[in-house]
Length: 140
Ligand code: ZN
Figure 1 (cartoon, protein in one colour):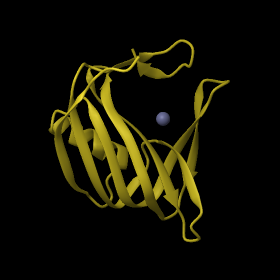
Figure 2 (cartoon, rainbow, N blue to C red):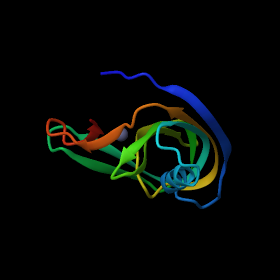
Figure 3 (spheres, rainbow, N blue to C red):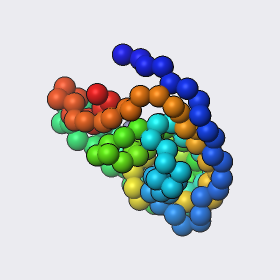
Figure 4 (cartoon, protein in one colour):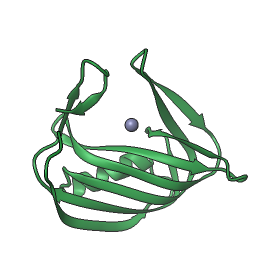
C-alpha cells in the first residue's frame, strides 16, 4: 500500500494576483518538472470554487463562494494523471467572521495573494487512473 519516497527539492514563492490558484500550482509543477511531491499554501482568495464528492452518486458537487476569503490552509499532493503532473489539493478558507469552509480545490478560485511551498520527492511514479469502486482517479 505505502511506498518509500525521498525528499528531493523545495520550491517557495508567491503566486500572482488574479491567478487561478489550481492552475498556478499546475503551471509551477510543469515548469519545474515536479511529478511527485506535496504542496502547502496560505494567503487569500477573491472567490473560490470547492468540491464535495458525493459517494453515492460518484460525482462532485461544487460549492461556489463569491466572496473574499483567507486561505487558512491548503494542503495537497502531486502525482501523475494522463502523463502530466496533477495537483490534488484541499483547502480551508475563512470569512470576515472567522467562519470556515472547506473542500476539494477546483478551478475557479482566484488568488488575491498566496504564498506557497512545494516539496518534490524522488520515488516511484504515482499514476492516477479511474477506480471502479469509488469512481475517483486514484493511485494505481
Ligand atoms: Zn479531493
